[in-house]
Length: 507
Image (cartoon, rainbow, N blue to C red):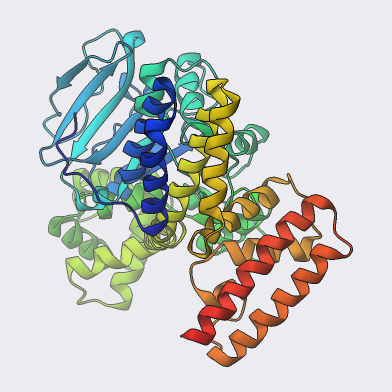
């Protein structure tokens, strides 16, 4: 069991759902009550984000960068075929969790990573749980998954179980693993049909819920491998090409994801997980000081970088290449050219920005952390509904339904209605004209009032007037010209605008 201290509720919505769940527990059957206890446990736990994608997309490297420690194995081995949950603990340790529920502690490698080989029969293993003292994990559990598209069918099955594409998850594994409430999807240069399928089948908690801009974000990894000359409008610049390509992929994947951001996972891992040293900074400074012809030759290819004669030892260059790749080295030299006296710490920070990791972390905070309360509360309500339906007791099902509806009538809980409407529109379950669909996504896709209204930075009076105008428009649309499904969404959006108007007037 985790030694982490018990966490408070993520926010007021989760607290309200928890009270509802606690109140219902004595009134439902024993089996349903046990399920409710699991919902309460998950509701209190940090937001659980699954990092998923195709094999060799660089998921584990990105996980290390997000955690700030090179702990997830990136080379092919037993552990890369397992689901691994990285969560906060007061003592660093890793446990093998078997399908039987038994656990076995295994030591970290000398370099601080999870061992590539576990010394057990992997077919008996459900998943791994790594407890780390890293502060980032106090409010975010990161789940590393095997790659989709792998030739190893068992590895794919483990990922599909977590993402909700399999109905054959055994009870022990379901309780331990099937808790992802959000997904960070890793793509490379081509979005494939099964990428979209995996996003479409993403589950939140125990109930099937579509991925959408509230709970899904994608990154275009290995951005440094893009051939800039093949991307129109890039002007031969690799990062600009990556931004343009990520924009195109965002159009393909939206509204399944909030956005697609370019990132260079290897560079991000090196600078964020302690792999960048003062000695590295000095070696890069020495390379920057070489004559132009030698420097240009070194940067032509990996072979030339390590074999061409120059004052910087070949072993040092090989080490840099392994951890930065040529693009990262080139970025470092450009930064040093701009600021010859730059310190090692400032160089690391500049390279973090160049890797795209800073933007990914910022968006993770905006898309996931800031909305954790709503995401977890909505997932918990979906789980309560699913558990009541699974009981087969019509009276129990109605009782849970009535309690949830009572909660959702309260103004403070209307955000959950908005999230549900957004999910339905994003998934295509309710078809809306494109401009109205964009408006629904905007209203439900932000926690800032001016962004919800599409008027960032405007004065409060202007925001209030616009909110009231849109509230009246959506009320009219719900009565005239909409289908029954659209009318239900329109009622929710109308009330969202009205509550925003009230909040702006009272503030």
